[in-house]
Length: 202
Image 1 (cartoon, rainbow, N blue to C red):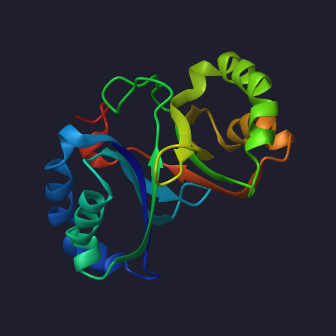
Image 2: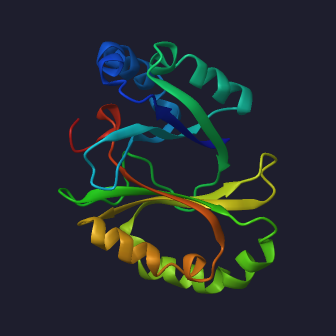
């Protein structure tokens, strides 16, 4: 069962992150076989870490909650406030084999649908699918966020690989779901592959 897990850094937690970094890296390495992608979320200029994000395959929500509870950054007080969503992968990639151009940068987009917008999502789907095909080479990964029971699509989550922020913004502003007003909340982050999950640095 796939989950999107976002955990925020506590403000000014840099010294704590440094203190617990080795334990954190060892911990997430222990979940390598379960992890599709993992790395820090960043400000749009890619300069400041805001937290961490991982796409992970675990048996159920209880296993995800336990995974977060045992995260050294959480235990050490450097991170808080996890947000967890069911997720479905629309492309088959993981960090090991995803399309990616060396020296490009990555952005993670986490968008939540407006309430009662199933009909609008369906109405925009054909145009959305055509757009995705036209920009397929940009996707590191993508897929819908799901309701807790996995029955409904409730948002979208993707990581894209682009030359710069301008290219990322252009990609997003031309997405039919965006132009059609589907989303109630959009979080647009810089992102990078975590040290354990970066095929260019192994």
